[in-house]
Image (cartoon, rainbow, N blue to C red):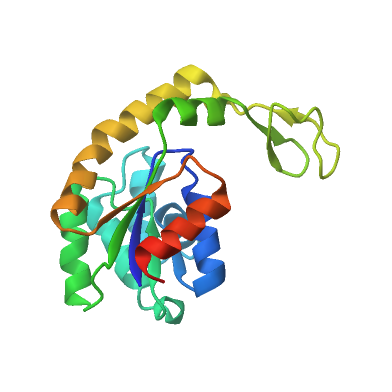
Length: 208
């Protein structure tokens, strides 16, 4: 099964992607990870992407889609893939559909993990991270439950920054959600529940 994963920052996409990978063996294709790997390995597309990244510019759609096409040649994608972080706009979605069609590997679903904006704000602003081991907890953790290290709040988890990130997400991604709805690929999941309940709903909705 080939899936595009959609959802706002803090909606729990990463948690659900990890569960799908573990249970079904899908390849998790994170465009951020892919860009970093391509730059590190100095592939032709990686070197092209690095020019834009070094200048602080967005990597062009055609470079990212080229990386996705390269990634889909890997054997671990045979059981299906989860695209995370791309596409971000309807323009990118149209280009991606064209490339996937040429590879005869079209999308089966666009999965939207939907969580109310105010719930996400509360979730992210209460998030705390351990300075020593990276454990992610909440403001209820006086010390890290894993290593007893110091828990701190990331700079980008303050309310003003979180609200701005969500506004940017909504303005850029709303047309993308409409695009996949128009393609009859959109599957919406209520993400404001226990992660296991959300996962069970995803499995049922996708017919896995």
